[in-house]
Amino acid sequence: MSTEEEILFEVKGAIGLVTLNRPKALNALTHEMCLALKAKLQEWETDAGVGAVLVEGAGGRAFCAGGDIVKLYNEGKDGGDYPYHFYRDEYLLNLAVKHFTKPYIALMDGIVMGGGVGVSVHGSHRIATERTLFAMPESGIGLFPDVGGSYFLPRLAGELGLYLGLTGARLKAADAVYTGITPVCIESAKIDELKGALSGHRFGNDAHSEVSSILARFASDPGAAPIAEVVGAIDTHFANPSAEAILASLEGDPDPWAQKTAETLREKSPTSVKLAFLQLRRGAKLDFDDCMRMEFRMVGRVIQGVDFYEGTRAVVIDKDQSPKWNPATLEEVSDAEIEAYFAPLPDGELC
Image (tube, rainbow, N blue to C red; front, side, top):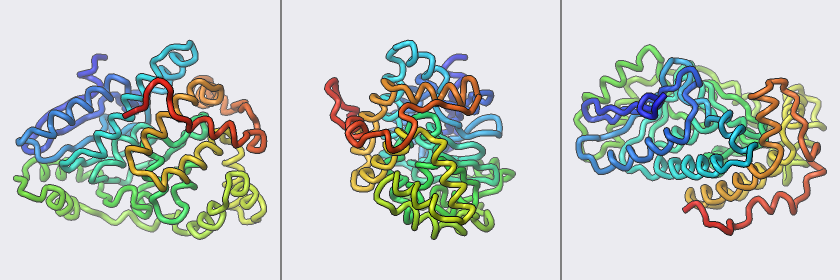
């Protein structure tokens, strides 16, 4: 499949429409798609005929389920440099989305995970539907909540971001709206009508407010948010000063939610859990560009390690769901080992 077929661009009225077009792969991002979308955003930034950009996924199942993890696994395990190029250009795309001056509307219909988060959550306008399923599951494959997770997760209320980043918990529409990840929910049946309203709009001097007004006309109530019932427990347990302390706090609480959450954390890569903990605590004090620079330092070390390949093997390749993490416990992962992931890069930073 050519790049043109993997990602489609069209100007409809005043809207630049982007379609992530790999439905059989749940619209997972390839390196070529990242390069093409970044170039198109640069073009549309200065195109007076484009008042706003809308990004959607093809197929009805997913907005974008992540990056092309199988190719990253195969190329990285063989010692190739593809993962370095992919992550550099993916992160530069995340920066382009964050700094895009026109309205950037992410239609987060279906699965939104990993790399799909990076091309949606940093946009000025994010929309959920009743089919939305949002997660940052990277700690389960030996990675960390990247693509700007350092920035947006710590800025959620209380300890929600740390909880989502460490556990990979999945959010449906009501929870996504409750957390503020997707401020607006619409019914999927109204997507075409919404796109028509946006493409037919004549933008004035305040395009962002105009888009917000249009979205408000289509907004629906996603219902009660299940996560609201445990947000107090999240804030209590995840406010602890270390990953080890969080796990101990959960294990000491007899509540079934706490016990299940502790079990979930024990299944994740210990290195990833400790790495993500420090990443998100530091990200709370950094601006977006510095967060992305930090993540690029981190990912360069991750792809030189072992847990990313073991986690991807267990979850994506062999699907036995039984990764053999190394080290195997949080206590075996030293603070010095984790600190090394954050060191400046000798061969050049992201930006």
